[in-house]
Image (cartoon, rainbow, N blue to C red; front, side, top):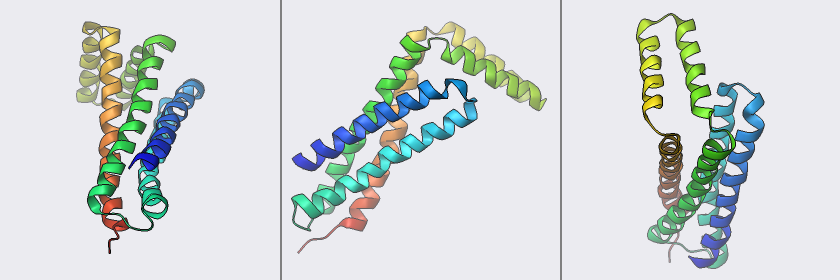
Length: 171
């Protein structure tokens, strides 16, 4: 597992960190819907690296053979690395670079709710705004980072399972 995990784990971490960071930095001038799409594209790129890392281990390190267990272990570690990169840049960005991100995003959500004219959506957005005021900015950043970690890790783990089934070859 060593070489494949080191190589693709580092690529996944850097892809998540740099890619998601670029999406956050460059996305400041874009609307939130476009930012979300770019963020999901980066998450998809990181998750795809799980498959390629498992295939690399099978073809290069293990001479064309891999068990489901080996594939799963490799994929999960790569998924953790990529998820850490995304979560870390998310916390750094929302805590230090753009500390008003959540307040601005909540204002955007409230505006969308008011434009929809649906009372339940408006009430939900207002309640979320009140909740943000009662939680410290550090806690919000850490919760958002944890959410990004678990979302990316869950998708990466699912990819590891599917890749393990698809790429499994034993003698």
